Amino acid sequence: MSTTKQTILDFTKKDLEALVKPSFRAKQVYGWIYNSYVNSFDEMKNIPKAMREELEEKYTLNPLKILHKEESTDGTIKYLFEMTDGKTMETVWLKMKDAQYDEEGKILHESKHTVCVSTQVGCKVGCSFCLTAKGGFTRDLTAGEIVAQVLAVKKDNDHASNRRVNIVYMGMGEPLDNLENLTQAIKIFKEEDGLAISGKRQTVSTSGLSSKIDKLGESDLGVHIAISLHAVDDELRTELIPMNKANNIQSIIDAVKRFPIDTRKRVMFEYLVIKEKNDDLGSAKKLVKLLSGIKAKVNLIFFNPYPGTDYKRPSREDMVAFQEYLINHGLLCTIRDYKGIDISAACGQLKETKENEKKDLV
Ligand code: SAH
Ligand code: SF4
Image 1 (cartoon, rainbow, N blue to C red):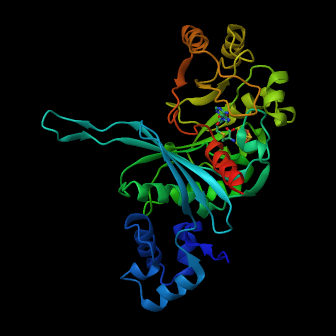
Image 2 (image 1 turned 90 degrees about the horizontal axis):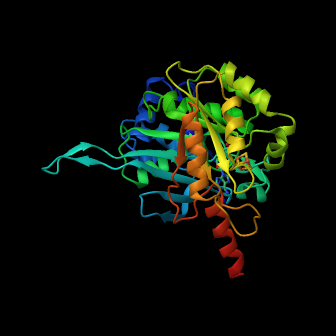
Image 3 (image 1 turned 120 degrees about the vertical axis):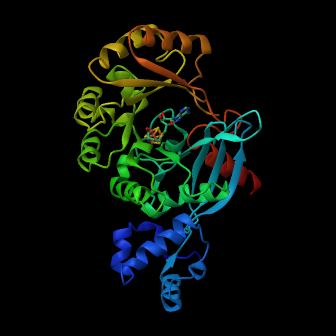
């Protein structure tokens, strides 16, 4: 039987203060979980035994089990996690920069990492190019399950608590469709006595639920947003992202303009490039026009094909030509050089591969 115990990772420090008395115990418990990385309540030595036992009885410390791990040559590690109800989801550990050493081999800068987390099992949005969408929607992740992903991959990589990571909410699911748990997870990550990952280091990627972009902005958590734009006209965007009908391009642009952004920062627009769909310079021209007046940067993503899709990966030449057009017209633009290209790279692809293997076995 799977356990139905709630995870203690669901709580901000304030929530915990209401549960463990006197309230300074919350700080101690937080320290054990997020700084000492303990695996059992019993290891929390300065917590009275009776309290440890009570916590043990009510909560689990780790709601995730590593089911599968795929490591790429560039240091990217893709995890498939199983939750307490047996459902699975993915998390990716991305190495953004290698460590740097001086001539004597002494470390100058440590390597830099980003964790790509999931927010739902499946997704309701149903984008036509996305493998996660194919399995439909199963359920929202709890705040604790979102938090646990970062904690688990940091632990698995011996990454000390005080070493910084960035978080991108770009795994499976639509984060703004699970706004309450997302908000709670962002707050827990920010806790000074916990992982202390500031809002600036967290980026929420959305397919563009305009009213929820406003809501996230109102909560004033200081996070960045990334908009999965992918198309410059509503017709193609609706083909790619069906809910564009209710949240059209203009409504998203308007919501972005209202979003509180650090004046030194830019809003990221993700543009998934699909061969012969949106890889032409006419689209690039429209994109420049659309983003004029916004402090934007564009991230071009190669469509990553999978069996059964009709969409195709664009050529590198077309991608570079698209990028050059944007840069020459004053936009900042990068090409996502696909991390983990030799593993099941895009969102949902590891889960899908593993589930098909399982089906093949029966
Ligand atoms: N639901 C959110 C965040 C998760 S999807 C969103 O859509 O923004 C994260 C990113 O993966 C999105 O930018 C999406 O466009 C991209 N993605 C999905 N399927 C892909 C594929 N087959 N190839 C490349 N990128 C893909
Ligand atoms: Fe959901 Fe994002 Fe996939 Fe679209 S791309 S189906 S919003 S996870």
